[in-house]
Length: 246
Ligand SMILES: [Zn+2]
Image (tube, rainbow, N blue to C red; front, top):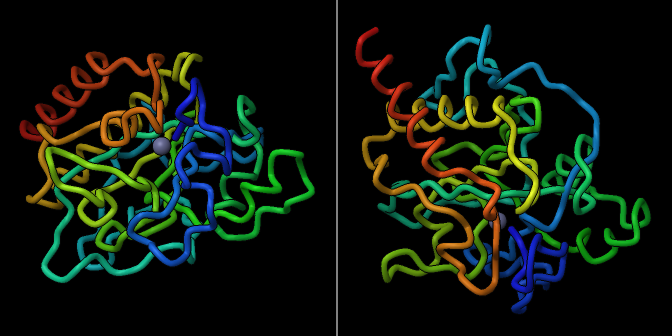
């Protein structure tokens, strides 16, 4: 997520009251997206590079991606009764803002971001936020919340007249900023992940994939102009075609 003002969200300070530690309204938790950035570290084995990585697959019984790095977050709860995931929301995040590769996104979603590790973390560390998955700069995927459950990524939001997007969406964060081009590995992994989700949850649709900025306009700007929607949609179409032919 990004902040309203401009480019990336500032952590913790999302323009509209989002900054409070969420908590009570899980459904409307503040989001962190573009505000944080991560720095460098881990290279998970999972996800998705384009070449060589096995196709992503969701285990329907658990809502977990098979063979993908898991850092389960305490920041989730059940979706409302009889509400299924119908929307996919793409975000951008970096922690600290503009830095990639560190352990901080994991730590934030795990609820143990050290407030003193960076000046911007003081506020960010109070947020109780998560996403279902993050795709790092190298395309590696980490999952934080099972897809059937509600992650706290969207904050106050509305999609086609329906508010509270956390209730009915899957949130995927790309490590990045609004302005820095996302990587090929990220596009590949995102297409693979979305393709796996579409294959697992019939309530999702390739027609219902949106950006955080589109469901929280004026408040969030991620994934930003750097995210090439036509490129992603083309890759997704290719992935799905391949899957059908397989
Ligand atoms: Zn976001």
